[in-house]
Image (tube, rainbow, N blue to C red; front, side, top):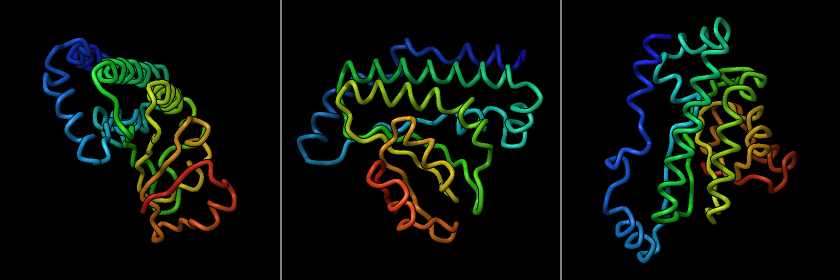
Length: 186
């Protein structure tokens, strides 16, 4: 806990250096060119894994779910504030959330853990982006994502990638099961 308390102080979303002074001009130039504009953020699973390591995070979720939840809630608020600050300057076409939370055959954490530690962030960020007119909320996760896609849809995510055939993902089956609630990129 002491390491966490020391580290969290380094994340000041109000720090002027977090948003480049040229952001509005750079975004306008990209939009004029017709390029897809995207803001990419680390999702809560990805970020907590960066802080704790994969095994450390999985053990933390079991041994001290209160601390894991506190860390996830902190990350949710930090990114939400950064999104709001960014969207006050410019808008973009796609919010990309990076998670990489699946192996070849299963998700790395259970659906219950996903609901507890990840979905609050995904819902909040999706709502902020959508309210600002961002049409695409994209989830990036390698591996078998079949059990995760319904949770992503429930969280407001409408695109996912990649869909790895080698991880037993069946795009045709997903389309039949979930209709057009989510789009897929390879």
